Image 1 (tube, rainbow, N blue to C red):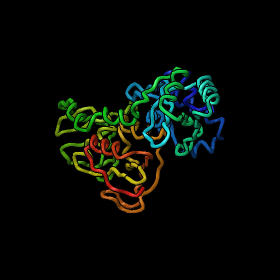
Image 2: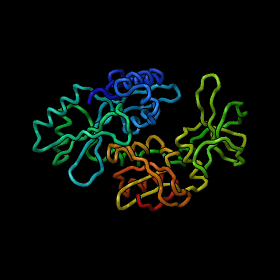
Image 3: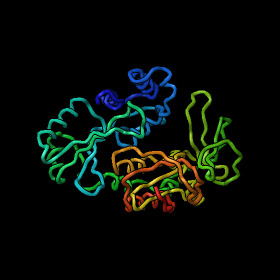
Image 4: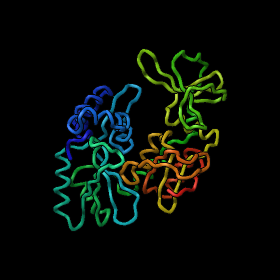
Length: 326
């Protein structure tokens, strides 16, 4: 339980990307031989992105540093008994204290350890939830443990309403006349939903570049001959919103929300939907065409997303929800 990547990173507090890879490689050797490691599809950046989506860390891509967040509890937006999930850093001592306290009050509260099955990687930390008969009991538990958390409003709702919208992002851009660098580049195609090398004649376009010396990647959005730096996650959805490419899927009955796997949600919104359950999304293929999305499109499906959160995310991204059986 205590030899996952998060427990190790929590001791360090922050870590450079290069060192993070070394730590992952060292831990993987305890689980797999060299051939098995080569076949792993879940790479370093997957681990990093998913840790951030679940509120365990913040990633500074420009300076290539991962910062572990302080431990905190997030209220989940679920029916039935109230439940909170542990976010941020963790330690073996902390988990033992939580388990001991819960076991002493087993008639009122229980702790739930769940594997992140969609991660398919033993390095990824378990989901740790605490469920009680009332939020008042949960509050007493968190106070005894000494870990903060908002037990009045689900974290997913707070995150979705405070996140910026694509309009906010677009209006905040600072454009200037630029000469395009002679670097390797790819343009985001709003029809195929991924970056690729092609001649794009659109007035407004999203382009990512790679510095041939530092290998650092940069993302610019162009408007004619002027360009501005933009977060890649938001940049994709700025383009999709501009061209009215509706790709958000929602199953109201099963409370499932999905997106094409090639266009991950911006960080704040990814965290909002991830903290509906505290678990990572699963991947699947569409069985039939939906809107712009052809049959067999790979999609990322989030569980436990209610109508309010799905509609708020739709509003923030400037895209309509497509009804789907997920």
